[in-house]
Amino acid sequence: MFPTLKRTNQNTTIKTITMKYALLVHVNKETVDQFKDASAKAAAAAAGRAYGEALRAAGIFVAGAGLESPQTATVVSVRNGKRQVHDGPYAETKEYLGGFVIIDVPDLDAALEWAARNPAAADAFVEVRPLGGSYFATRGK
Image (cartoon, rainbow, N blue to C red; front, side, top):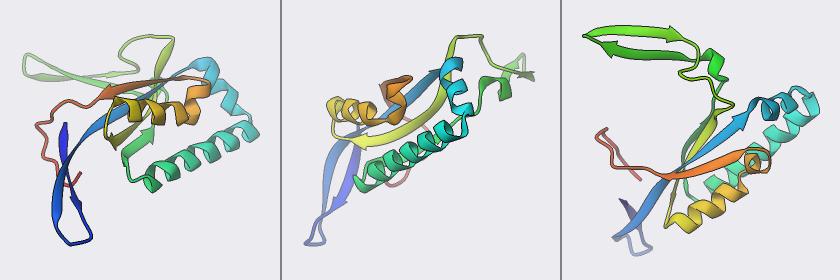
C-alpha cells in the first residue's frame, strides 16, 4: 500500500491509503490479427482513448501504454559480469503482454471494476496485480 496525500478545501493535507494496481492486458495472435482491418483498428483506438479519458477523469490513472509484439523484443541478461543481448521474445507463448495500465484505487474490488471496463477485456484477458513495494525513487501519488 502506498500513502497518498490529498488536499482538502481548508488547505490542509490528509493522508489516505490507496493501492496501485497493474492491469496487464494479455492478447493472442488472433486477437491482434483482427485489428489489421482499418475500421476495427479505428474502433479499438477510440475505445482505448475513451477508457484512458475515464481513468484520468476519475483521478486514478498513473501510467499506461500498449506494447509492440514480442518479435520486436530484445532480452538482456548479465552472466559472469558480461551483458548478453538476444533478439526476440524471451519465451514462445500463445499469449503475450500487449499493454498495461497502472491505477491508484482504494482496493482490489475497485481495480477489478476498472479492469472489467477495459475495452480489451472483451477480446483478451486483463490480469490485475497489486504493485509491490519499490526501491526506485518515487514522488507524488
